[in-house]
Image 1 (cartoon, rainbow, N blue to C red):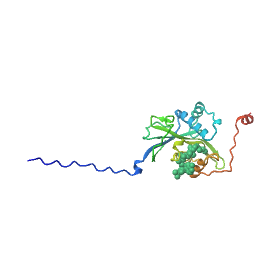
Image 2: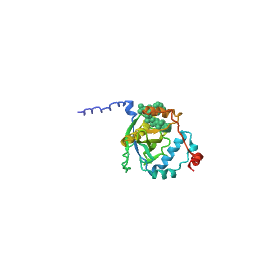
Image 3: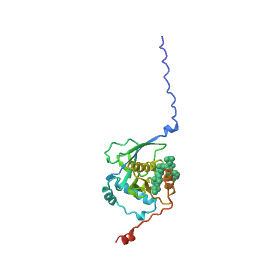
Image 4: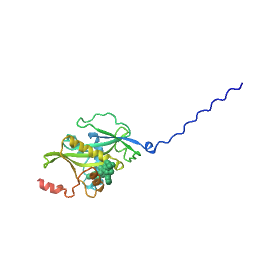
Amino acid sequence: MAAAAPPPLPTAAPVEALPETKLASHPLFCRIRLANPSDVPHIHKLIYQMAVFEHQTDQFTATESSLSSTLSRSQPFQSVTVFILEVSPNPFPESNFNPLYKPKVQILNLDHPIDDPEKETFKSEGDDVVVVGFALFVPSYLSFLGKPGFFVEDILVRECYRRKGFGKMLVTAVANQAVEMRYGRVDWTVVDRNVNAIKFYEHMGAKVSPQYRICKLTGEPLQANGN
Ligand SMILES: CC(C)(COP(=O)(O)OP(=O)(O)OC[C@H]1O[C@@H](n2cnc3c(N)ncnc32)[C@H](O)[C@@H]1OP(=O)(O)O)[C@@H](O)C(=O)NCCC(=O)NCCS
């Protein structure tokens, strides 16, 4: 008797395309932490980018060693303080951090991965972690309030990372710290041609006061007044 024909092999179920949003989700781990001495080369480059952006490279005389000596003498939040914002496609490794500030980590879901032409220059820990931006701020005193505050000297998100929420993370981190320390205000200045930053600050709820002018005593007049 002839053997019965084997049953037909099951055919694979057709692959169902995932909705576009699922296919396009690229999680990016973001962390804000206090700068440490090994960040100085990155901070130096970021400040230089700030000077380029503000067309003030002629004023840029900071060196890695001048920054290093200032930052190494600064107690975070009592003097010049730098928050570093960095990203990684993978969870951040556990590291030892300054006990004065617990790093803030959050995950951003992007539609597309970010193509970072300066990735090699801004690598900060292993192969994955890249510095995206920074905020540099100092304590101030608000005599009308009788309280300290923070003055933000620089805030910068590298160009390829802009408009994705990173600037907001930096401002929020400084504001959180001010609230935690019961400080009265966070101030900074912005040049009036920097329309993007002004829109960004207004979006964050900041009041932009056009009636103030910045006074700078520097160079020869500083020496003349100081002698
Ligand atoms: C200003 C700067 C820090 C903003 O950072 P960013 O990462 O691009 O800003 P974010 O993506 O976090 O934007 C936060 C909010 O502001 C809004 N915003 C940002 N830039 C904006 C713009 N040009 N126009 C309108 N709204 C803007 C965003 O829509 C976002 O709103 P959302 O929370 O509803 O999405 C960044 O553009 C930068 O580094 N610029 C160059 C340096 C500079 O100008 N520094 C400030 C000097 S004073």
